[in-house]
Length: 110
Length: 114
Picture 1: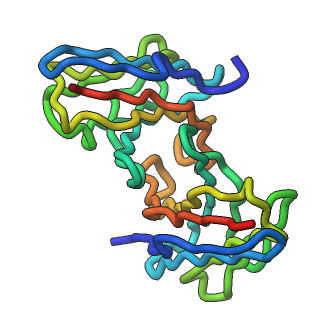
Picture 2: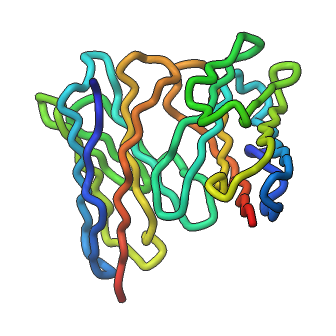
């Protein structure tokens, strides 16, 4: 049964690079890895998606090793406003039965 | 509208009363999800609609919960005879099509059952 595992919480400081890793040992061959960000009193927001190696956008980078059993969301030079919960997600059956991680609560300190 | 709209944003009700939560998805999005999120917890899948097809209701926690989607657009989640354990944020999301992992969420309805 596919599942994702991520740390419950992480702390860091402004200006640092933050890496959040999600493990998904049973990821399907054709499955993408997707990450979301959720601020208090808001719904989750899509931030990045990838299949292999590295993907970068204006918000974050996503690193996926060759075996694809894990993925790492990298947030460069974080600020206080990056304090949020980050979720990884897979979709092993390529349908609506999405597998959400439990979320990583990231707290950025001044 | 530009995004997924949910109403009301907050609902306080008394135990035993019925409530209706509304979701207006992004125009043209055929897939619609309802999730529940308890305080400090992750997302609990409730129900999924794809266009005008029969929904997947497998996540509904009891027969007090029901949902419909009219005309493949607006959806309403109804909770009958509310209980205190129903207190949570109810999130609606839509995506362009089935199997698309890019979901657009509303801000949710905070339901408090006294």
